[in-house]
Image 1 (cartoon, rainbow, N blue to C red):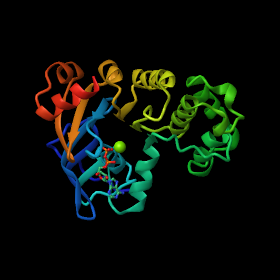
Image 2 (image 1 turned 180 degrees about the vertical axis):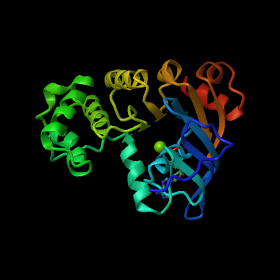
Image 3 (image 1 turned 90 degrees about the horizontal axis):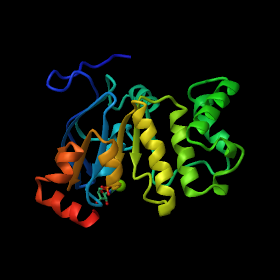
Image 4 (image 1 turned 90 degrees about the vertical axis):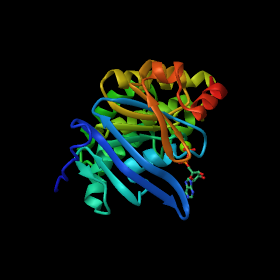
Length: 254
Ligand code: ADP
Ligand code: MG
């Protein structure tokens, strides 16, 4: 596959580059002039009001949504209509959703081995060994034979994280992974995400868990009306928000 040249203007070690990205849903202009370069191993938290475009932004990174203007380059591959590029990028990018999206008719273990066996063409025994390793890592290996409906929300979300990791992604995207959970289950999921961050994974997390942002993020982005209106280290972001909308938002959630 051809590897498009990266722009000299952006960080040379960027694993994700978005330049002048615009997207519309019909006439609705949902992403406006997004410029973002993410370094390998960087941990980014994205916050902002409901409807500001956070989900759309991260879904554009693995082409769950298509952008209409600008460039998105992921690990040297540009996202275009070329399906080979889209497939290459999707293999490299794991995603965890608010509502887990596990296959209800498959066991936990089968959920984890489906992609490795059918997409990566791994032998089943190898896929199962890898799956068990990741289930141990999210501390849920004893549930391997159960169906998702037999697990708590926090357990299902940890399974969803393990499933994404089985594809050996370079980048993990999280879209409000704890917002559908009962409060007592939030911590077990954030702990798994924190250990992933400590292991050097490149992560973009849409979340309003500001304790997690303070502890884990290298950079916090604030979105409003389709734009990244402010970004900073967590220390500066929380102690000296510069934008009036950021201040309003933080006063509502902190
Ligand atoms: P956020 O994740 O910040 O809440 P989203 O990216 O989900 O924001 O949505 C941004 C805006 O785009 C919202 O106004 C939403 O209603 C709209 N939107 C999201 N998905 C679609 C879609 N598939 N078709 C039309 N409008 C959409
Ligand atoms: Mg969203």
